[in-house]
Length: 210
Length: 210
Image (cartoon, rainbow over all chains, first blue to last red):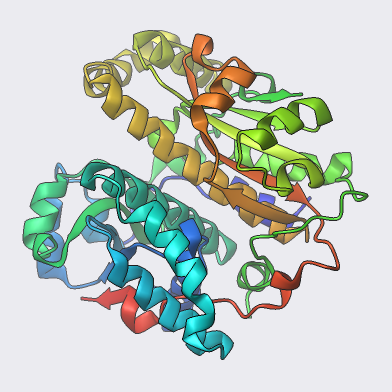
């Protein structure tokens, strides 16, 4: 059996965290490394990620999350905020990063940049929003996998009021939107759901091989 | 360094595959296990996944993918198709699976089922479509991670004509839509991009810790 599959078998959506247990700096760094390394459309990473341990902020966000206890009892709350706008300057920022990282003259990337700009910049705002939000789910996938790989528990969550999150975290002015969140920490001994058998569609129902 | 992070560092979006190299059954199974184990909203897995090695079908799909060579030169093309509709019967199917897997009486799940139905079934079709499509990105994340964990190369791809894919694969009649695809196989020695340094936003630009 493969280590990665083992870790996926080990993980579950943690309902009750042990609030006395906090991630070490190394554990948090591993998880943030994985989020940073996530694949994304054109490599553009059209999102910003908030990593929140502050209790006061988490209490406010909990009220905007149907009171779910994971928000405050976990070690950290991670909010993936997708960019709600996307324009040429975002492509230019990316190209500057490519040129610096790969030690290339920036004008060597102009053709590729024009290609990306022509594909992305003209899209209507609602389509851009959906596109960038989808990328946050890839990054969330890496968070869940990385946490499981070091036996840190996590709970991915869509049950929150995005508009309230945007207000509390001041996201709208930054052209960001709370897309999806995850809590990370350590399961409580009393979380009965850790003992539940994992439920998945059978391979016959999930896959068609052609 | 953590194995999972190592594998993320190793992977890259493969531009040129060696068409003579095919995945073994074990390699393919590991990747499908990971897709099957993906987290999803409420655990509903609102998608179906096509795993395509047939050359004739892949040639048709290549024409609907701006001719990108990965479609036919990889070992397998994986098409994640999200459910375009979602109704009470999908929740009921899930509850039956939960009851069977966990050996519970089905009526013990009715309250939870009603909660899911009241949240999901009334959503407008376009919102359902976006919701289910986002879940495919989580599953794609698992595919990319699993492939990297066993040194299988992959390329996630959004550059295709979804309507054409839907026609070629007969998805529309099944209330499915081609959401995102990935090619898997083995990099060609001639793929120069394997030597490119990975470009990512700096942690300072990507994260805010509160």
